[in-house]
Image (cartoon, rainbow, N blue to C red; front, side, top):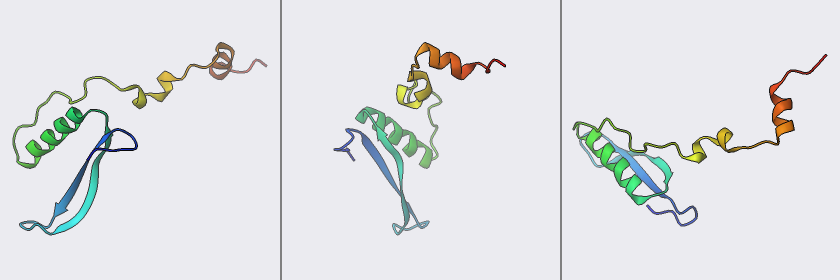
Length: 90
């Protein structure tokens, strides 16, 4: 499903009772991925897994998005950084 508010893509899943199409519960597998091709790759990975086929061993996302590392993207002023990383002088 394409997201209109966040310009991302989601994958929704449903778990059914064994041997039936009766849905027991639903869940979102991924909230949002930027590219539709990333969503296709994740869905392909899940389909392989659910069908007991070999799953690729290489990661689907080979880089770490900046949104996953907020502490690496924050740049404090030098005096604030120094104060927060040193013990007070007594």
